[in-house]
Amino acid sequence: MAPKICALCQNAKAILKRPKTGQQICKDCFFYVFETEVHNTINEAKLFSRGDRVAIGASGGKDSTVLAYVLKTLNERYDYGLNLFLLSIDEGITGYRDDSLETVKRNQQQYSMPLKILSYDELYGWTMDRIVSQIGKKNNCTFCGVFRRQALDRGAALLNVDHIVTGHNADDIAETVLMNIMRGDIARLGRCTSIVTQGEDTIKRSKPFKYAYEKEIVMYAYFKKLDYFSTECIYSPDAYRGHARTFLKDLEAARPSAIIDIIHSGEAFEIREEIRANQKAQQTCTRCGYMSSNDLCKACTLLEGLERGMAASGITDRARKKLDAEGPAPDNIRTIPFFQPPSGHPLVAVETTA
Amino acid sequence: MSFRIMWSNQTFPPTLIMSSITLRVEFGGGLELLFSNIKQHKLTLPSIVPSNNGTKLNGEVLSGGETKPADVEYLMHHLRDNLLQERPELFMEDNTVRPGILVLINDTDWELEGEGEYALKDNDEVVFISTLHGG
Ligand code: SF4
Ligand SMILES: [Zn+2]
Ligand SMILES: [Zn+2]
Image (cartoon, rainbow over all chains, first blue to last red; front, side, top):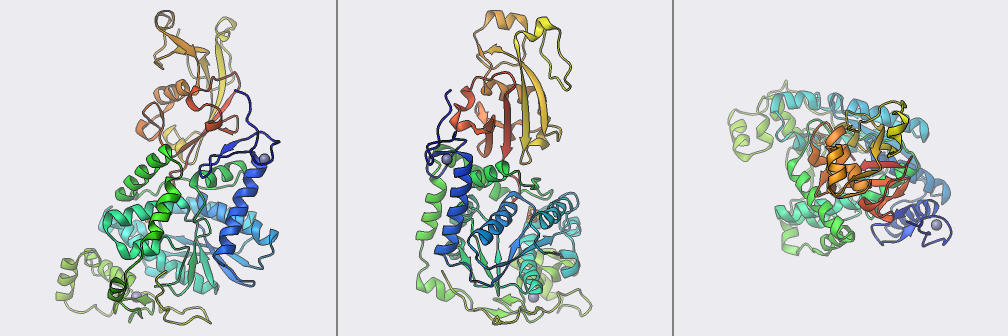
């Protein structure tokens, strides 16, 4: 088969067929268009201002590794004037997170970015290994997700950053849209496609890879020979997400634009006023000071259940009632250190439904 | 004579080399976990293979049944039947790679090279990368 010529420069040999456009392009043009599209996404959504301190949520996986590399490149090329940091959460999963953190530590050297690692153990007094040994491999991702969310915010507060960026890509967002549709979770459906979220969080979060296809991220890492870690968590899978992902990949194989189409469908869902009114106003957790829509934040609720040996109380209403019936939380249980938001940010963020 | 995977650079007697091609195969993105956690493999395939991708080669099949030049589709069957250690459904589905696995032939997206129908040449390098693992 004769080599195909790049559709952009009409010169070099094409090495990639772009899933978004079907264009066949060469390696240099691929690097250029990939980086430029991320730059355009950043510009159009006005993600950054000069002087911002930005933490990259870094797992050592492909997405966050490519994100760190591309943001460093763009920050230099276009003189964004950002201070970039790597922020990693150590869930305490032996054989998985300990290895991937080694990758992040190498990235710290390779990209010369300061790195902060915050562990569940130091924050909550529980590693995921210990949580799973108590609750088993069901609902472990619920604990992990709630704990990670808060840990990222607290890590960001420690770094005194204005903004957390995460490596969520177009495939991830399309998958989340599908899952929210299947669950009928309209409130989340509206939120999950927005590129910036600053709702329940104190710290702004954004997804500069919102329109970047996973295929291109992996190809970019491959051709740039970036050092990333790719092992599945030993406590995965979240079976439901796994099915959504398989379904999405099948759709993509049949029609590559499916991913962007699904994101657009998600964006087209408007949350009607009366539904919005039912969403609870934000307050702060009475126990730890973190953002919450109840007296206790989700992390404190889950932690109390673990500490009292009734982990299900954070999951089901019935178990919660049983826990409440046993009386108030004893004074000697482990709690989360009180949350200090970074200076210059209001303690209570205004709920913006984008 | 059945063809074996060559783990070293040792060569077969000259009479057998004639009809075989040597390939480099690499797994990445977590896919190597299905292949004894070894990323790089060097292997030899017959240059003519059964059209039905049957990998239990013997002289009879080759002389009797229909044949074709070894292509990437055959390579996938060979890898699945000979090298893969667990969960074949995570590697192949319906005669091709499972959606979400990227394939590069000599560092070019296989979608530009005819995908499974690409006829392999001696010293070709084929890379399989899973995009499904880890964020
Ligand atoms: S798969 Fe579940 S337990 Fe493992 S890191 Fe992800 S959320 Fe945590
Ligand atoms: Zn080009
Ligand atoms: Zn709390």
